[in-house]
Image 1: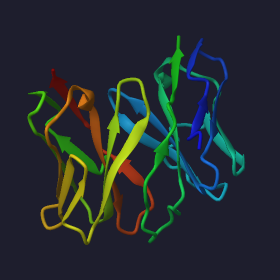
Image 2: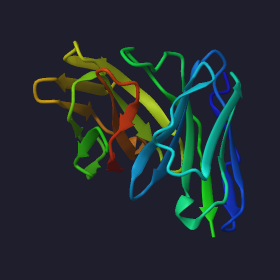
Image 3: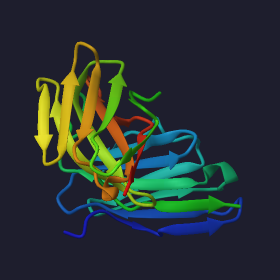
Length: 119
Length: 111
């Protein structure tokens, strides 16, 4: 299995531009997560999907952030307009176990991340 | 807020020594996981321990869980230079559905 695939690996953009990050989860996994990692705040959960449905987006920082999962094999995280404080490494992770209230969750498989720099 | 908090924040040891990292959390959990992150890479799962387990082994790794103290430890025995990485604990708390990561321990193993 190729694992979780993220693109682009690196993105440098200017403030105000739209940024789209992409993720292909492991085939057969039904839970997908977007995390953001910074030195100051560590790993923050932004949003997660179960069976393509957004379950919890309370970690999405602002309306400038949006995420979609149109099918089981693809998800996007979009920032529009981008700001310098959005600079971070964004990780996508998938899991074969449901992450629902009361369920016992399991191992997450992470992609290599997308390093975003907003100038 | 973060569920798990690791200590120490950083640890430097000689190759061959054992490394112990600790994790504390605040609310009841279903399970606790440890992950490793090499510089510039994604996180890699190491081991999962469920709330009804007290100890688990995987190769040179030993994880303990004390639910009464809300703490866990990760022991890496006979460390190698290749073990140099950041190590994170992650908790899935009872009644919730999120995996929350701590701030991590940076381990440096000197050859």
